[in-house]
Amino acid sequence: MPALMDVDLPAPYRLWINRHVRRSTCEGECAETTLAMVTALPELRRVQGFYFDGPWKTSHWWCVDDRARVIDPTRYQFRDKGRGTYLAT
Image (cartoon, rainbow, N blue to C red; front, side, top):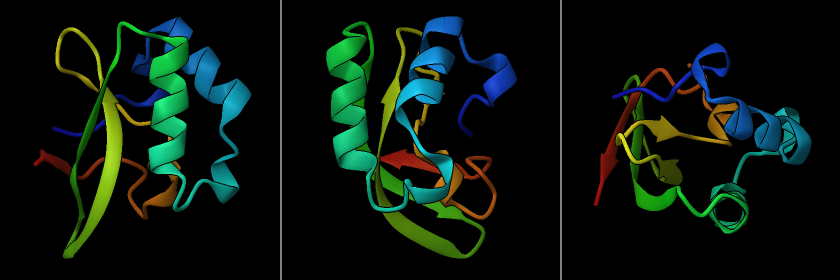
């Protein structure tokens, strides 16, 4: 399942990401960023796993909401901006 894109994100998540994540420098900051996000928005759950961007597999952290939708505040680090596949471990 790909991450929700900005237009589809619920407003509180979109606002938090816009205020706390620098899209150009978020590479390698997924663990810290998701921890901060779930602390601020406790209805989210933090998930560890792999992200598949075409043929590339990357160890990654993201959040999910109560509907199991992927909320990835650092998805901008990937070539496809979060349109790939998330696999929890």
